[in-house]
Amino acid sequence: MFYGEYKHSLDNKDRVIIPAKFREIFKEHYAEKFFITRGLDQCLFVFTEETWKFQEKKFRDLPFTKSEARKFNRLFFSGACEVICDKQGRILIPDYLKGYADIKEEVVIIGVSDRIEIWAKEKWTDFFDQNKQNFEELAEKLVTD
Image (cartoon, rainbow, N blue to C red):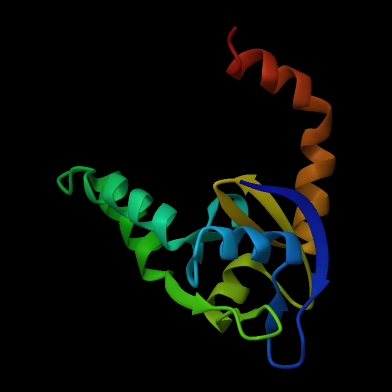
C-alpha cells in the first residue's frame, strides 16, 4: 500500500507534508484521519484508521499480566494521537513525538507496506547505512520459499 522514500522539512509550525502518492492512497481508501505514535528504532509510525484498529486489537489482546506487554502498550498508546491532513496535505507532529524521534527540521518519510514511518533525516541515514549491507542476509533469514 505505502512504498517509497521521500525527503521533507518541517514548516515553521512543525507540520510536515505527507507525500502526494500517500495522500492519493488515503483518498482511495476514504481515510481522513490517521494515528501517529512512537515507532520502533526511534522513528514515528503513522497508521490509517483501519490499520490502527487492527493493531490496537492485536496489542490490546496481549496479556496485561505480562510486564513486557504492559510496558509496550503504555509506551505505544500513550504516544498516540489522531491527526488529520490539512488542505495542503500537512500534519502536525506533537512536540513529544518530535522529541522521541529526535526530529529537528529535516525528515525522511518512508512507506512500509501498511504504515508510514517518519524519521529524523540523520537517524534514517544512520539506520540505512548500518543495515544496507545486511539486506541479503536478512532476506535469507526471513524469507522462505
